[in-house]
Image 1 (cartoon, rainbow, N blue to C red):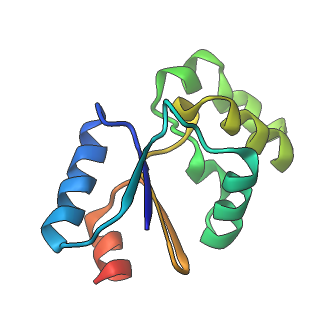
Image 2 (cartoon, rainbow, N blue to C red):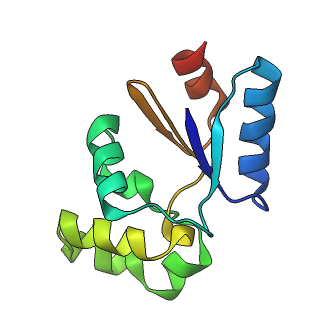
Length: 116
């Protein structure tokens, strides 16, 4: 599994702790230092079955500063993916990618259902 996280994010810290307590190993990648590429994001988005908006960090400073709440509805999918790839801080975190699943954000019940 791969977890994209921001080490200073308390939600990400909770997710990492949850994985550790379950004995589930994963590779971690700092989303700010090594933001995901548009190709990675496209693959995860398609595999997840989630709306693309779920990949945006809608509570983040960058999201608000860029006025994306109003801009996203008028952008096509490729433009949104390209935008997400420009700055890891725009991306919802953590993202957990594994064999056959992609989870965005940390919702313990959802993670429990997926990972058992």
